[in-house]
Length: 481
Image (cartoon, rainbow, N blue to C red; front, top):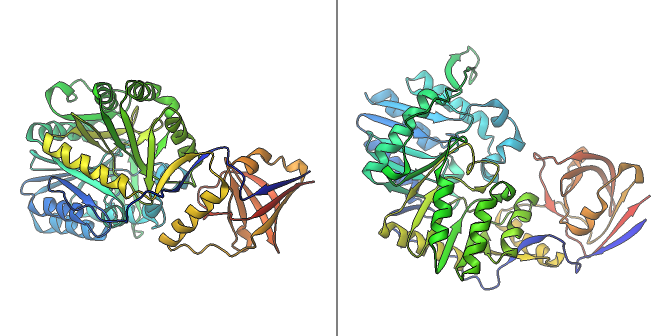
């Protein structure tokens, strides 16, 4: 069987292609109440440093990982040279930290490329050995800081160098009542909702035994949404963050701006999709901004569902900021639009913005969309995706292996490759000695490359920890013998 695939063929899925209407990139600087990381704008990191330095009595930090050297050194110095109590709620589950597939659900590609887990465990061990109180929850993905019990700060950023220096991130101070409720929530989860509560240092450098314990699920005094502007998800006990997102969309009459890192698992949050659909039917303009991840098939398929009901979806190379704004209300949060993790389980937090914060967050979202590198298009030509990827690889300083523009892929019939995936979806490749492979849809194929031909040798489950480049071609022959 011989099938010809051309660069002018249409993909069956959608993809993020070049936004021809985008304005020249510029950093948003008209912000006072919303703190940002955006290229040369490091105001978010500067404010986190200020919060840690100004803490007088007690400092509480929740972050999935802690790897930024400047932040780590600051916390360590505070632990060694002050009398304040420091508490950290984080992630120490080796099944997540040492599993690339699992980590990819929680961290950005930049964080994954920096050997995050080893550095995180090393930092946590050092902090623990210097008197910092550390506990860990398998569900922790929230990011916030509370100082002296009454001053809370919620952010989309992990305490990593990519998040605080490179990604598009946002953060905001929350009011005193909400800060007190967040402080209460931290204490409850720290005391009753942590799987890892005891640590045994070993003689080996950067090694630490972590004692796993059961969670006490008898939460009877969690913060209530009627008492403050704090919103959160905790396991399946409370999902008032998702409830608030739905509530704001239900009350919108003019517009909705929604930002997220990824869009996945929509089948598990159908109520949210129905709410967005109903808003569009009644004339609300829905604009979504995310990271344009053409290499994540789950993200592309879920985004397509939103575009099909009438959403306009834009993207850039590095967004990790999350929030929701209508003409009347605003909400900043730590969760992605993710029906697998965060909106119906796990631990995430959010905050209803005051009016001045809402206006700033709105203008920030407008700026992101005006400057967006990408716009999502259903069934683009392969050449449109190729052009977008050439620009993306240049921005990321990627150096894909050079291959001919006319290619052949050969496979034996008994390998049972997913032929339709090759015809309908983007094809990714890597050529690196013995690790040459192709990745299409849900599968990776070990291959040998010679001349202009990939010869498939083995069909594997999707391999998350392999470098991938878009296969760019004018003509491709798929030959199944």
